[in-house]
Amino acid sequence: MPHGRAFAAGDPNAKGDAISPVEDFSRELDKLKKSFGELGKKMDDSAKAIEGYTDVEKARKEIEDLRGAVAGLLDAVADNGGLATLGDKALTRARNKLRELE
Image 1 (cartoon, rainbow, N blue to C red):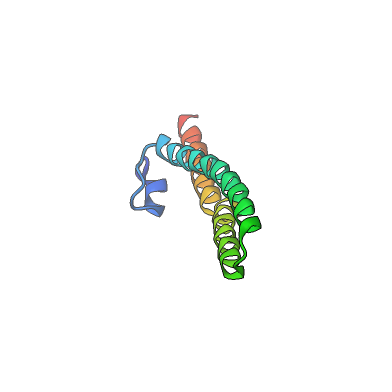
Image 2: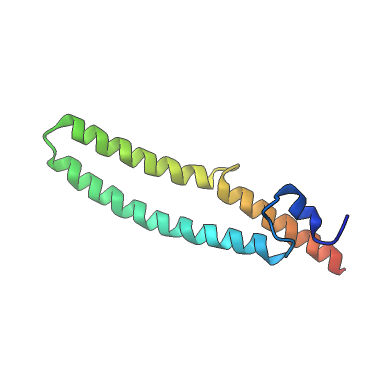
């Protein structure tokens, strides 16, 4: 198998560079950290808004929107979620690169 192709064979858009999967993982982790902060603010804002609603449908919609935001973050950090998958790719590529260097 040609050098750098083991990782690229699984992902046609992946670079053969060992740094690429690590950069992808780092970028997604940064996005996730930002999303956690935004979710905290959304939860606070939603709680305040729901307290002021007299319309049950508006309150339900606010809760459903909040559930959607939480579900998106949970999906990202789940065992087979996007972040876990990128982390596995980065780890596998780093281990393969280490073996090549030995």
